[in-house]
Length: 251
Image (tube, rainbow, N blue to C red; front, side):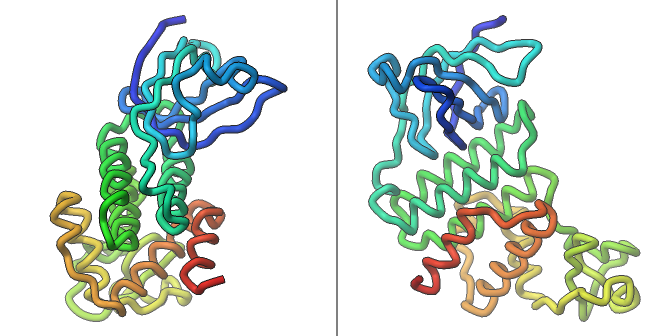
């Protein structure tokens, strides 16, 4: 076993037996890893972190070569994002980000860009007064950086540039030109402004994307398209997305 140290955002934690937990982190150097923290529930002072969801920690772990479950010997909290936790809406959004990373990323698939995006999004969520825009930008950039994004540059079937009307196909994962629309009769119409917004966010950095104006109609369609795309290709609706939907309608 080798000993490694890295920074990681806590994605998931669950109890293991009577005294330990298993935690899943998305780390800068190693991607998504799972580790066992022995005795942390019996001796919480043994670790310098209470391992709350979406907290940033520096961890030391023994990397096993024949197992996906490593042994974490030390966890030091670097940032608990306390101001996010003061708001139920922001806490749910941060939880959604971590759940999306956990669902999309494969174990030990290193991606520093996604780590930096996740960390930047959490830091921005602490202070920004438009958390919905941060979450939308995160979804779009997360899908782009993971190679999971919808095909919007051209027709997903014939690859021709789309100059006028188009429809969005969940099943095929992208836009259909007028000649190819019959290949998915369930494809739905989509505003050109929605397509342009997604492409703009994909191609620009986080700060530039935050300055982009979103009219309510485009924002509503963005949420509808992105959530439907995620649900279809993940084969499930994320639990935190369900809670966000309830918060939005005031349930």
